[in-house]
Image (tube, rainbow, N blue to C red; front, side, top):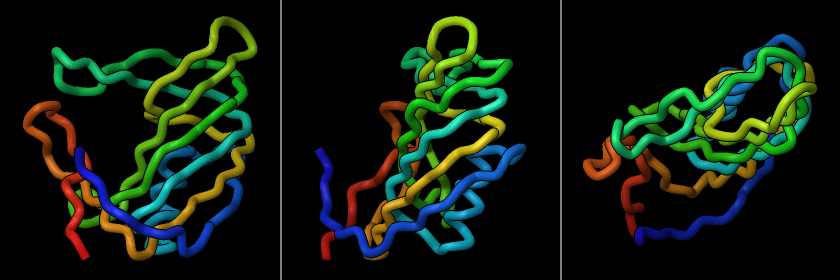
Length: 146
């Protein structure tokens, strides 16, 4: 197990506008607001979306489903951390389409109808993703002790 400690120092809240790509908008927000570490949550509605799931054999995220039409964004949660020196956003979602079964997984992309979000920012946080040999993914490295 790896662990560290931090405190929420601010909360950045807002709305992703209709037609914007949700993950890209959250990534742009993190860079604009200089958020290097934080936790994201959101809900709303999307016009279309794609999700992925982790495939241990492939050691990568692979397509897991898509919603071609409107869907409720029942839950979105994830984190902001540094990857390659810049803030990046990893989020997972539960989507309830107008037709068919719910879809869940790591959100690859989604077109917002309306998405309200909050990012709990850890200005003293130490979250950085680096390659992990066991999973093939960039995962949080052990935090520096302060």
